[in-house]
Length: 246
Image (cartoon, rainbow, N blue to C red; front, side):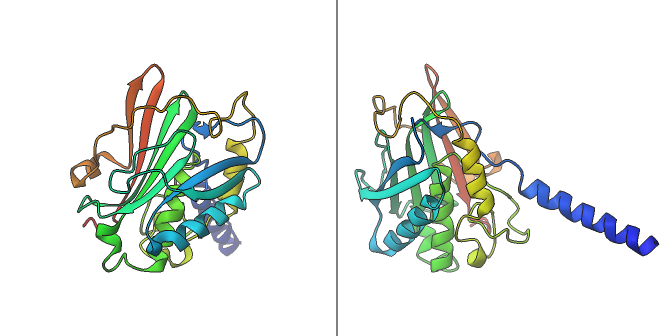
């Protein structure tokens, strides 16, 4: 009996830990406005041939959701600065320097509606070990593109066991390169309601693109940063720091 109780207790603790990791992981209430599902959203290709396959895989993975239909379009940004374009997600790679981050995702929002977004992956780290592998590149690309839809992380402890999703921090991305069912379920919740307009088709005038750079000095302040632009407009940035603190 005592052994049975111990097993039940252990199972309860395990379930609680899983529940914590798999809790609601939407990025506030931010989402793209649309009048019908699936949301048709363009991903601007401003990446080199090294990253093209990873962007294509991420687009296909996220489009497996019932509420998303992403397509890759010709890029509209200079990769070194990666300015946003209204109504779409610009995806860029460049040597952004020893900033401490592998990738960032930035959304511009009017209220809770995303109007434009950018994803940047940093070749300063991805050009050398340990981050110059296909697994690391796919993990980072998948996660940063996922943020552009309104998702945040499922777990933010690099040392925890992998959850089998790119929205999970990890020291070993071998099994964290794609979304999992919990990501798709969360997207269903985020995009459950419809809006009266489509911010990916008839976007308002482009919002200001200026926001502070993110470097090692920012690491102590966490991974999410918000800059108010006035009149209900804001830019929010998710930073994926290097797990080794380089």
